[in-house]
Image (cartoon, rainbow, N blue to C red; front, side, top):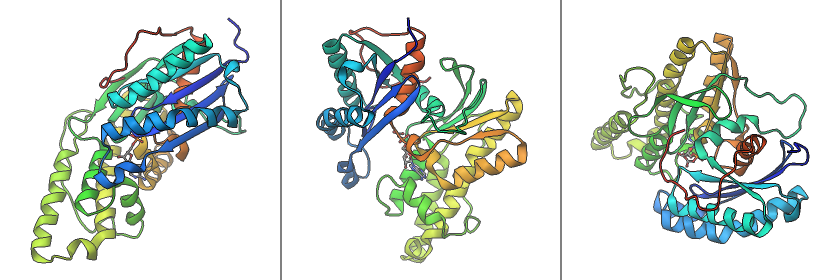
Amino acid sequence: MSTKNIVILGIESSCDDTSAAVIRDGILLSNVTASQSVHEAYGGVVPELASRAHQQNIVPVVSEALKRAGVSRGDLSAVAFTRGPGLLGSLLVGTSFAKGIAQALGIKMIDVNHLQAHVLAHFVSEGIEGERHPSFPFLCLLVSGGNSQILLVKSYKEMSIIGQTIDDAAGEAFDKCAKVMGLPYPGGPHIDRLAKQGDPKRFKFAKPHIPDFDYSFSGLKTSFLYFLRDEIAKNPDFIEQNLPDLCASLQATIIEILMSKLRLAASQYNVNHIALAGGVSANSGLRDAFVKYGEESGKEIYIPKFSFTTDNAAMVAQAGYFKYLDGDFCDMNLAPYARVTV
Ligand code: KG4
């Protein structure tokens, strides 16, 4: 099989972002994402509405990705799509689209694990000089709305979970605490913005005592909720009067929980390359903590570009490209899955 002029169309539709990307010979040519504002009014993603919006968005998003890449349908070597985990109705839209285009063009199909794709976002290349990519083996802290995991990444397809949340994900902790403070969904970016003007040491919240490298965020959420309830009983305007300090203190607690386990894992597994991935990796405090950790420990730190932190098809196309080189294709009768780990 020739490894030249391989053009992969990537499709991502696992949650509330419809995204398509084109990679030629390992270089990203386009990455187009339509986000769904319809969920804002509900304080969280409504699965039924997400599927409908994917149906509306998928054709224009793919057309735009091909157009921006300067690629026609006939140039495609394969279509890579997110098979899971995610919302089943959302995944069905991307999976069905991939089957349709593969059948129509007579090209190969490649199924991609969404979590592995987040990790492999670190290998997306835009052909820019000075790009850095982690070397195997490396540790990856994958933090999103649905997952908080520490992964030992031995190769692009060999990843093992060495620690993960036993309840809520870090993104969920951001979003649920934001909701309690009356901030819009998703709350993570709002907490990040407000935290910049606040004092991270002003309030103290409960940190979990969980063995090994696992995480827990439900105790923090409860402690935050009870703290606010008690303070509001004394002063009904407590949240409005202390919003930046609340956000800064909460964010600092989440970051400290994430980083303490990561530091422990890095020293136990003795790896020198440490990466960050997933939607919460957009958090400026977490990014700063990562940089600081790199400076203090001498480890090589990899932080994704903002466009590759939240759900995007570039990472799916990249994962697909690796599988294409391995001849690892799937057939037409496979179905998406809602739940799975890496
Ligand atoms: O990976 P992702 O796009 O999707 C899913 O998990 O489905 O992650 C979304 C999560 C949300 O919980 C959102 O609040 C969080 O990432 N997030 C942030 C920031 N940007 C997005 N959390 C904290 N700070 C941010 N700047």
